[in-house]
Length: 232
Ligand code: 13P
Image (cartoon, rainbow, N blue to C red; front, side, top):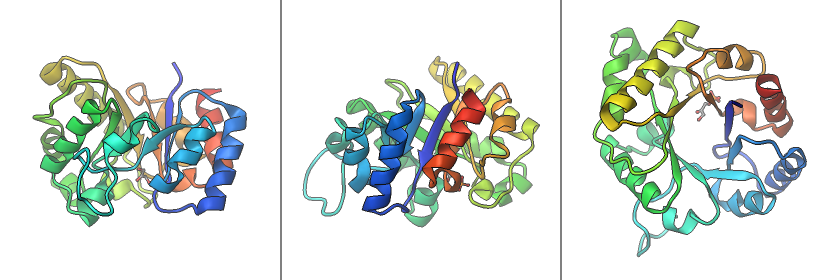
């Protein structure tokens, strides 16, 4: 089974760069690469045949919400949406409650949520990792496929990565809890400082079903090299 490679492009590419990105990627036509560009580039990636995810959306379907884009508006263009990324939680004050509404809206609109969870450095130091993860995954209303991305907050963009056991223990815990609480088997991706050097080792951990990549995915050729190293 191929590992899933998700590129979270965040707020990086401009229009021409996005065109180039999609154009290069479509020539490879790999299974299991999901690209999450800015909303303004979703349509062009979709037209290039790239499997697309959004980075976030608003939980109501339509109405007077200037500046927002809803899952309902995205549903014919994207298969996935990242939900609850730590940058949304910290910079845009997204609570677990709002995130639950967004997950519900994903299911309603037949978009697969990629729910990001993970602890801060302080929480890690205070041995609260499992407590935080439990808080982030409990009381969800699951009515379709969902993917979890474990992204320790202190790992994002820092070059600091938990050791293999650290990743494996949390991934195994998440899978066990989803089985116990919701009676479903789920895929868990790892995210945080993934690059070409460490991608293979991380993917060799059995409980890791794929990667959610930020900085190292901005260069499409680097993303392709990561995909090849992990899957070919
Ligand atoms: P980096 O890969 O840049 O650490 O970012 C990870 C991330 O936030 C992916 O969602």
